[in-house]
Image (cartoon, rainbow, N blue to C red; front, top):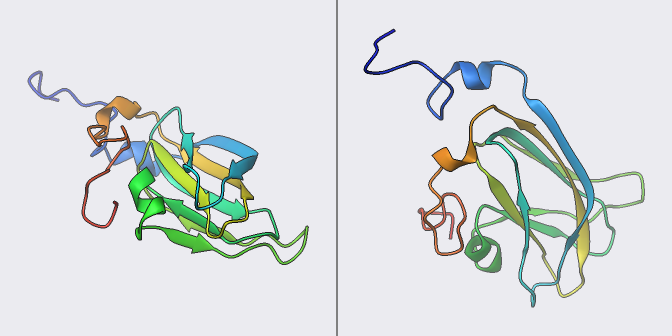
Length: 142
């Protein structure tokens, strides 16, 4: 190991992603209607994997990586739940510090989120976007 370039945890450090992640789980997160501001889910560390479930039968759920993305056209849609025991989910293998959720209609919905966290400090991500979100302003993010 070079003293000029010490080895450690970081965004490009393979070992940070090879180990199992620290679990993070939260449920019943409100996703407001399309006429409101999206809900921001902030993670304490950089993620390596996120699973988002739509736990409401009322409306499909938008998931994105910036506020502008979910309010605009840069988001994923998770269908509404078909019953109270069948929750559609989407897995994302991404390194982010936050995600944004919003209903895909004027009817609010809700979500559950499971994430695997690395030991990487979120300050290492680009947080220079207009809404303070990682990757905001990138092509395809919003």
